[in-house]
Image 1 (cartoon, helix red, strand yellow):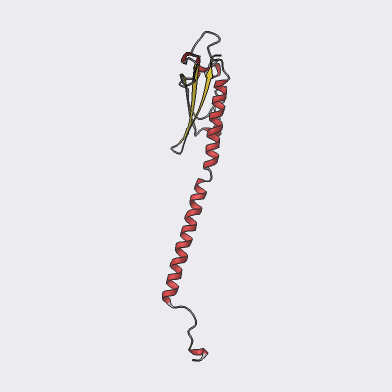
Image 2 (spheres, rainbow, N blue to C red; image 1 turned 60 degrees about the horizontal axis):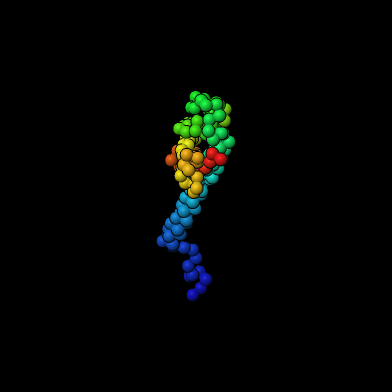
Length: 152
């Protein structure tokens, strides 16, 4: 057998099989990149939701346990002076402590629940409050942050 008689190159079947394999590999890699890129903003959104919940919870926990002026249920958030004034608060879009909207956080919904609790041992439920702050953004974010406070 001489050099001229040897086959050099690939057959049509080999070429088609290699194209299919490369296509499958490229599709898999591009699919992974699309998934990674789509979820890359998720940690930032979760961190924002957590920061919003912490800010609301801290604001509530810093208020007086019981009403200092004897008037319960102040109408405006800027006039809230005790913890139970926040019960039932529902904000469409995050707001600061003076009830001013924060435009960059308008996609979040915040709800607050303040209820007496018996979850703390040796503390009567009349002397303990549980604060639940729920921050949601679409179907992907639903964060609940809770805190406890006693009268004493």
